[in-house]
Image 1 (tube, rainbow, N blue to C red):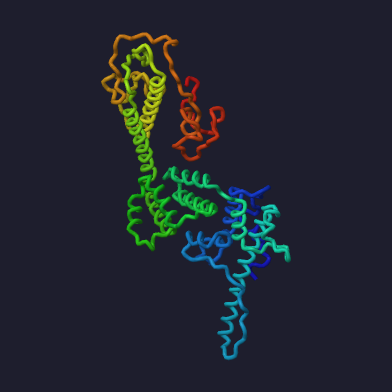
Image 2: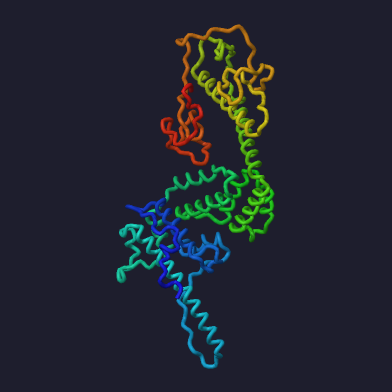
Length: 439
């Protein structure tokens, strides 16, 4: 009979051998096992639970399974052998027997798959960490696979409130690249829901939808579909329906070749918003008593004999911000594939290397505020180093921004793949901005 004599582990499973946990289990190690078991459970086809996820219902909580399938996964019980009842026709007896045989086949298949999954899990974890689940009479662990996983999460995979806050912040800061499959957003939200469940702070289906909604809305690509979603009846606003609706919208944009074009505009709009924000910050930064400045070569020199360290440091920060604005503005223009806007190439703070542009080639009349070059006057020699008290902020390496004024761990605008541990000596594939020999 089907289900007997089949080695599901070697014949079907995607992971014939699970990643073994050496020593005490942790949340991340348990999660790795759990993901591998999910993949294995789905490799064996089944009509249970709607038929779309194989035997996934054996390794996930029923509530979690319901978020992905509209039909619950119900593990079959041992079928009852039919009895010969006086008065039944031969056709009825045959039908009764056929039904029993199908129920028995299904029961044995599910039992065999679950036994294979359980055996994998028990082998991957050192015995002392599963001793509480072992039956001392039979010396076997007969608990359902999901219950074993739940025991590991609750006993050894405890998550602190600080870790919950960090994961929540990562989710809020995530920026979706529309050129990637939209299921990457759904996977992220599913994993976050699993994490919160393990932390004993489970989130609702409505909250999951809201997280994905906000991430997708930031792209500006799916506004029509999101508006349509908002008009749906509350009972129709399920996690399954949300994913189906957005997958269809994504496929339509892909067929119309709108993803690449819109994504480019999305990136340009982001740069423009950041540029405008930095300009606003520069406008707001004003010393209590502004000092008149004069232009001397490529350096702005205060005309006063004594400059406070605070004002000097402020001027350095302003210079750095202006350089960043110039670079970002040119990046935006390059993305939009149009002639660059007239920025202050002659400005003393302008960086010397800009792709396709020669510094110092634009007349002062072409400069745009707040980069207007100050009027030239008789040059004043720079003050002697001994009379200037300048406190320069030390630059540090960030994987996302290169050499800047914050560490990678303190970065507030981390992009996908950001590495907190990256250093100037070992950039880990991070940004090379401002790391040249002349910086």
